[in-house]
Structure formats: C-alpha cells, structure tokens
Length: 166
Length: 352
Image (cartoon, one colour):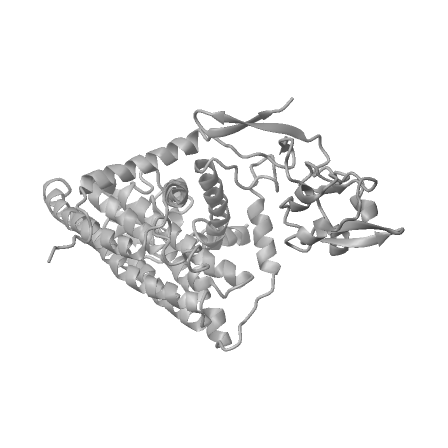
C-alpha cells in the first residue's frame, strides 16, 4: 500500500511571502492603473470587413428559391409573398447570426453588414419584412456625442489596447 | 443663553454624540456607502477596468451608490410562502444591531481635563486606569472583552437568518458560517489575549495610552487579528459564506429591497467595528491628539484598515472552505500561540 500524500509540503514562510507579493502587486495596480476598457458609447471598435452583423437583402437579385429559409437553424427567416414574388423576411429575435443563409444563397442576394449594435423598443420591430429587409440598416448612434472609432493593437505591457482608427 | 448651553450639553454628551453622530450611526452609514463605492472602484482598478463612472462622471461615479441605494429602498420586499414573517423580517436586523453595538463600548478618544469640548464630561466618563476621561458611549472597565463578545454573537443570528428564510443556498451558507466561526473566533480571542497580557489590562484606552502601538509591540498578534477579522466578516479571500458565484448571496439569498440592504450592510459595519478595535489596539488609536480631533484620528485609521480589507477583493480569489480551515488551524493557530508567548515576554521586559 502506497501512502497517498493528501497535501504537498509547503514552506509557510514562502506562503507568507507570496501573499505579500500578491498584495504588493494589487497596490501597484491600484496606484498606477492600466485600464483596457473600451468606453463603449463614446468609442466603438472599427470592425473587420467580413464581420457578421445584421443581414441585408437585395430584392432585385433574389430569385425566391427559399434555400435561406430551409437552412436557417433558428427558424428566423420565413418566406413571404410580396407583390407576386417570394421574398425572405427575418426575425432578429430568433436570428443567431450564423451566416448560413448568406453562404447558401445561390445568387448572393443576402449580404452581411457591419452593424451589430441596434436598439429595438418592442418585439414587433424585430421582424424585418422584405421592404425593411431590403434597405440598409439605419444606424442609430448610441450617444449624442461624436463616436470615435477605435482599433485593437497588441501592447507589450497590458496585452491589448485601443488606439484611434483613421 | 441657558437653553443654548443645555442643548450643547446634551448634543455633545458622549453617550449620544459618539453612538449617534460621529463615529456612530450617521457617520458609519456615510462611510458604508463610500466603502462600497471604494470597493467597486478598487477592484476595477486592480483588474484593469474602470468601475462605476457614468452616473456622475466628474466625481468618478460616486453617486452610483446613491442611485443603487434609492433603487433598493423603493423596490418591493417579497416575503416567501412558508416562512415565519416576523422572524423573516427581524433576522437581518438583529445582526446589524449587534454590528453597531460595539461602537457604544469601544473608546474613540480620551477626554483631557481642560481645553476640549468634551471636558465637561470627563468626570462622568472617568477611567482610573489612564487617569482621565474616555470618549465612549458607555464606559466599562473591561471594554475589550465586551466589544469582542458582542461581535462574537453575530454568527448565531446569521444561522437564524438562514434558517428563517427556508432556502437551500442560505442553509448551505449557514453551515459554512458555523464551521468558519469556530476557527476565526479562536484566532481573534488568542491575539487579543496576547495583547491583554502584554499591556496588563483589558481596557482599550489603557492599551492606547501606553504610547506603544501594538503593531510594534506584537506584530504577530496584529497579523492574526487582521486575518481573523477578514475571516469573521466575510471579506476576500474568505468570502466563503456569501460566495456569490456558488450560493447566490448566502444567507441573504431570499431578501429583497430594504431588507437586502440591512442583510448586506451588517457585514460591512461589523468590519468597521473590528477596524476600530484594530486601530485602537494595534495602530495607536487617537494617540497624537485627544478630544474630538483624537476621535477623528481613530476614525481615519479605522477607515484605512476597512478600506484595506475591502481592497483585497481585487487581489484574491476565494478560498475553498477546507483551505480556509486548514490555513487557520494549521498555519495561523501556531502563529497565534507564538504571539501569546511574544506578548508574555515583551509585557514582562518592555511594557510595565
């Protein structure tokens, strides 16, 4: 029978020194803080070109094949008949932004936009019928002030930091 | 003129002034709000965040706490089915009362015979051990023992609170509290006994008036008392009882609205009371001054201790229950005994 050691032997003075070091590090950060927070309503990230945001429909291109409605895993896209033509409508309350509909579309009638921060005041607004789906998403500014676009860069000390994007 | 003098006499009567106005009820409530703000800001600074800011940008979001307090006060108090409503309502109030009560017996300052606003009362609050008056709500010769005894009662009411809410998280938390309270009370009592032996007294005022801060005379007792204080009042890293990622908020899980403020405020006020004892015993209390400025010095020292205790939230994670018990029994109890021996030796050699 091997004897199983429950805890490994620790040097209590080493433990105490570790605690002192932890508190010292905390005080160092307390005195000279290094913040990496993005102050969101005043600054936003400038997003990469193929960011998966809100989806936009090009009505003239769409052939009404219903593939997007079939592949949608969240049942967000439903086909509606609009003036004799079948067009998709989307419910953003269900959409998971997986982008399958954009991938599957044979004529590239669906495109992803870079808008991702939107405000809806009731659930009916979440459903986009083809007439609203077929327009660019009108972007509301999250604050009245001018929003600064920021970019992420790798920083040696903090990990990441945000710098203004031109 | 006579009436004005009477009003002044009764307003500054230590039993009223100390317990209600200055280091007592009103001052403590303001400090409580500031402390919670500081806790959030300090944790945010250490963790590279900003903390509350947008409520009042100019002063660093200090009004966020007022907004939170107003929201909590006006939200509905929900009393669950299947609890005894009377017990449910008084359960968070009793620990709060017992956290406040030590403020009545802890000396905050001494009263010189002349020259102070309190000099009139120096006869009524005369302490023969230091041969002058003591600024305290109710003078008892053995105030060190009484203050600690009142603070040691709190865990029982935490158990009552958990039991009366009839919630499984609360009952788990109360079991943890029961296990922890055994270990931290031993540490606090041994370190205080070491100080009592060292200074040959059980009167906090005499410990302060001896002129040697306890942290110089017995640093081991100071360390053990500080850790016992953190453990006893649920500050990090011993946030085991109200572990909010495991047990919602522990004994206060079922409470809402104003009762929640009372349930959460008790821990902070107990920390403040312990901080007063710490600043008196180990940091020299009111020492350079006396009278009303002396009470201010004591309060500033206590606030520094309290803010250090809440600052640790940013530094530490949470110990498991077994780690905390192992730490207290295996590592800190020998240190406590060492502080007892150090107290015996230093008290015999240095402090007469």
